[in-house]
Amino acid sequence: MRNGRNLVVHAFILGVAFICVLSAGCKQHQQAKPKVALVMKSLANEFFKTMADGARTHQAEHADEYELAVVGIKNELDVAQQIQFVELMIAQQVNAIVIAPADSKALVAVCKRAMDAGIIVVNIDNKFDETVLADKGVKIPFVGPDNRKGARLAGEYLAKKLKPGDDVAIIEGAPNTFNGIQRKLGFEDAMKAAGMDIVSSQSGYWEMEKANQVVSGVIIEHPQLKAILCSNDSMALGALAALKAAGRANDVLLVGFDNISAVQKLLQAGEIVCTIDQHADKLAIYGIDYALEMLKNKSLPADRETPVDLITVADAPKLRRRSAETLR
Image (cartoon, rainbow, N blue to C red; front, top):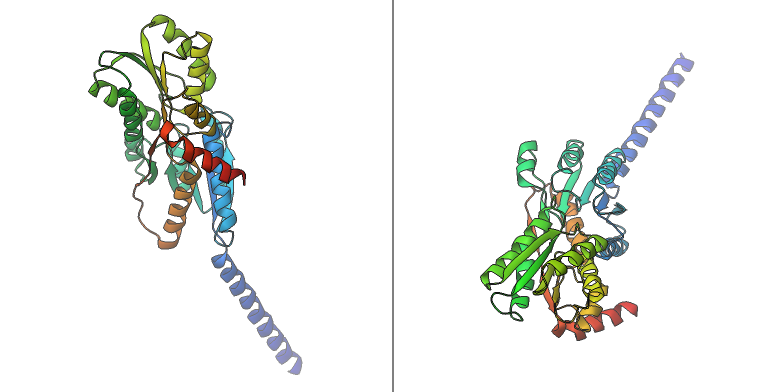
């Protein structure tokens, strides 16, 4: 009987120990820091590198609040690779995905799969297509700027340096991206309101080399061209190289979008009229903060607009100070 009682006592103790371990494990799991994945477009583009660096700095300052994984495709058109990155994050069971999609339509399906797996998804930079979202029956909040408003600001500033009837050209972003479409519309809004003649509007697919090729052809076809509005700064760099090669850099005005450091220098030198700052260093942070807020409060998704600012030569001293502070 004594042996039997001992066995019962031992079994009871083991059971209690098992429950305690299980309870501690569950509590530890509940208190584990959430893991956020930042899925970027091309990190070869300074804009997205700045965005990723800003996110890493933010995580380092809030290391006790969340973990961060950053992945980015090699070029902005590699949609298939970006889909694979999202699938990898699903497999790794991250808590949230903050994504700047390379395609406004093609990434919706895989992001829905992430949501079906219980992962929070926040869309930054390039807005998902509303029709595709509705077709898939999902709501994904967009945290980012009004690209049309930003492009219109740049176009309106440029228009003050032109006269009605002047020939202008637009170098568009990739046609499968919402932000590219919106920037084109913003440029068109400003140019049409000012009475300019848009003689060409072609895609440079966000790439410097492609924009260089397009602009080289446009300035030959339209010798009276007075200005070029580029949907990002990388394409503005390619456009400037084409203008210099043709000896037209002094008589064709140039507009960019993104406010990367290379363009800041050109702005100060008077080689670019203006650009738009959508605050790349903060854009991913806005998305991450929103994702953490959703995880904490279980809140329903809603879009949140972030700032855009016109940057002109008048801002050059401020840009120089900012660069000097960064170096320190």
